[in-house]
Length: 454
Image (cartoon, rainbow, N blue to C red; front, side):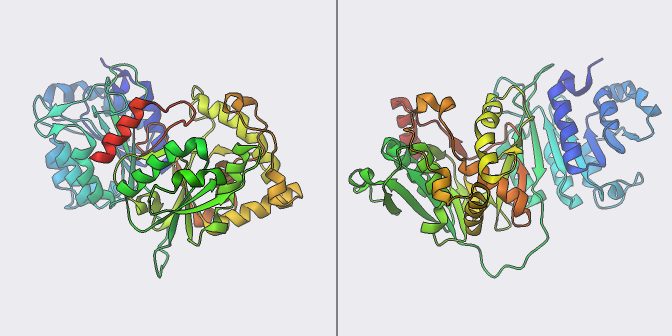
């Protein structure tokens, strides 16, 4: 007898998190198999409906009969889902009025009903959470996945269906990056939160703002070119640079607005100052901050980074993954300077989900908060004359943290103007963050050239 979730505790843990995060009341499972996953799901939610076509497997699930909140059906999921919305004797349309999670794991020897199931979900007119087992995980290709008559279980196979279920830009997804047991690939699909409709007379204007310096120009020129190639929509690019960059960039001939400035001795703190004052050299209503070593490697629309025209603040909880050193070190490094300047604990990690997008008024509000807490003008409150050396990063005296401070302020004082979104590990993201002090190589440059040439 197989253990629940194909003996994969990571899948079980993530399903449980999704149930809590979305207030799931009903789970619909396709592919009961022996019923052990069903039994665990029944402990998570008020009602589970599970479908199994195979007679032998269906009988192996007889132990589920004692569970009052489990409905078992020996049926073809494609046929059952085709009736969504038409009324069924077991009141499925009624259950679909509650928050629902679909756990899709049904297939025969040669046929998969997955696309028929997604068609049924489209007809149901709900925006559920969807978990698909045996899915190709591009980040962990060694995890098992399936190929059936409908093709390989990949994102491009199901994306048109997801756009019809949730609407374009109305969903997010991530993959399992850890696995045990049979180690199969899994995709988790969640609806974006839908705020109350707010009448808008126009779409907000957008500026994408960089702060950079001479050593990062090799990254900056690629980052800007990737934006111009892949980012659709209306936006303007603004770059603030140290004065010694002017001779280098004069021949770039890119459609960019440049501002040249005199830096501080602490170049790292100065970059944070430039980004924290982005509203002073941008007229846009929304400002997207991006670093020179952030590369947009696939086509997207600028609105895909927004939610109904407004900014999204992504975050990770500090305890999301105790083995993630970036969370452990990030909390140690950025917690104290944010506490000192904003007068409150850094409750989460907000340095995730590039570009970091904020209303222009948030920048001024953060600076005012810092001045009130520290008792100095913003410039003086975060100024540093300690020369920065990336090799001493962990011991460098940090005075501030732009992304963490902006995200914290937005979540605590302007939450009605932002959508807060948990950024789960493994979330697919079109922008890849590199490390400018260590990732550069001839091979990487050739790769960038190949992507730009496509």
